[in-house]
Image (cartoon, rainbow, N blue to C red; front, side, top):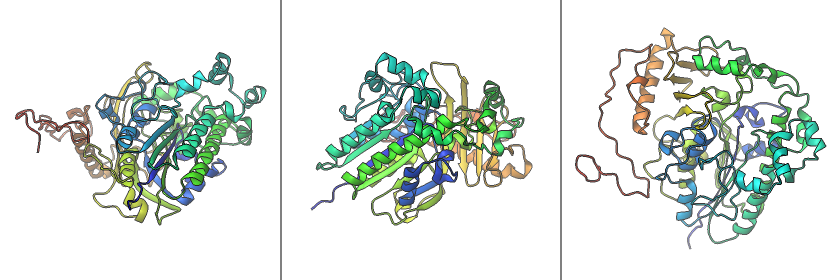
Length: 497
């Protein structure tokens, strides 16, 4: 008798940094369902997005490749046609696959096309375009522009069934009811737009935050004088960033944050009801929001913890580490290798991430110490916000190195001694050895993953002029992805070694 492969449920939110989830250390946020999942699984405390922008982060999460390899360098750029998604890999392996909610990878616009892409079941597909199709013109105008305060929510009698998030949960629960008892294992992705604006939720979720004061910490007072110029330009555009500290200033956002926790709870309850014994659950978010730290709002061309450190919880059948806070450095790039291994499927060489299964089950990790690679290229293809800002970041041990290619100022932070990232150590003689070692590691990783933006300019920084990059290095053929034929060597026309 064969053992059925585990099911996989991946739940994600939008614009929900680790700093606004209760189990990550801040009280009063009203996220009991996520907190309970953390108590039942392994909570990674140092998890990073691959890029602090929606579509590039999602591209990495759902393909296992960094944004620079997927074609999604910024919002509203489509996935390349040689890139396979998580859904395609699982569907081709015999899994029932469903994706419900925000996609943001069609390259069309924020709402996508309403067309279910390969790898997913059309019956459950529910992107922004399909949600809009269920609303009247008056309801669309109300959702996008008319619900800006708790008074608006009350006046228009907004209840959960009006929201995209509630309808996403309904379809996810429907899938669990219909498919969980079937003979095939399943992959279910539940992708909420909340707590991303326009912060639509029932008013009772907003009310508890009308007097809530959000403390952005010491970073709120950053004068940015030791930071790259584009941080100061961004701050100039966000002159009201300091208002987030006022009582109730974030009531709509935090209310929506609590509401999406409620909806996640509905889905988790359905998993327990319909597939309790053999289902892996992962929860995360694409990125965070600056919320006034460093005088900034929203997300953009920076690598501060507020927008790069994300919640990340894994619950694996048979794990003995329930309730553990794991401080290993992990990344969204590790999710696809993790779920592939958990499901008993091969992990192709092209994926740069590393499975977390052994760590989640037993707390063990083989191989080199973990580090996290992050990038930023462009916020969005169809607007000029921030422009082209090529940035690469390497987090290793207690330190974070940020290379701002178009600026003369790079960044180095000691996250243990300076968690608010106020003290830029890039020019510190005492940290020169650490800085140079991390740059070498970053460049080596860019070479390994064939970052198309790599080049000698990343190395010839004002603080380090002595290195010599072998920029005419050998070709790097595309690694096997499990679908395409082997890449052929340029000089021989034969498969590479």
